[in-house]
Length: 178
Length: 70
Image: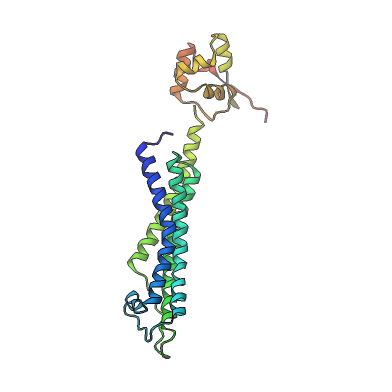
């Protein structure tokens, strides 16, 4: 199957961009945690409306920050799947079962990231308000528009992955026709 | 019942080489080889028509239905 040069070029570009993003994302998270350890006042802006009574200790900030790695791990999984997909695309391999698996993996990563994001956010709020006086500790569970967007995008990718698996099967069968 | 490809017989009758047929039909020699050995799931009407034209024969001269062993 012939693949246009534009597709190959774009895939190659995206492959390198995603690779850089996989490396940069955890580093950025570590930087943000470090920044908040140095300037704890920034945390109030991260959680608007949440009554954080006292300035959190560095250990509390690090712990809350590490919670953020839960959804990030899922997102990195999705990015690794994307990297794999673009890696196949840039080699001209577009309609195969492995590509379909990668697409499904991206969707699973996005869905898991959205779900873990809700959990992580709730845990972060509990951790940051733990030092509050009794009665002022907060457990907040909220679903934002972004979360719904990620869930829907993830579900869509899972569905497209399944359809692509079927398309790959048909393409494979077609290849065995002379 | 299974379909057996008799392409090798027609090639021999027409004294034509696989490479020449592949060139005239516009498919690879490897595909001709696969076709001869019956290792394909199917043949497109377009390919069949070109082979028939090149070998000056009918589809029935190339394909035969035989009783399978099982």
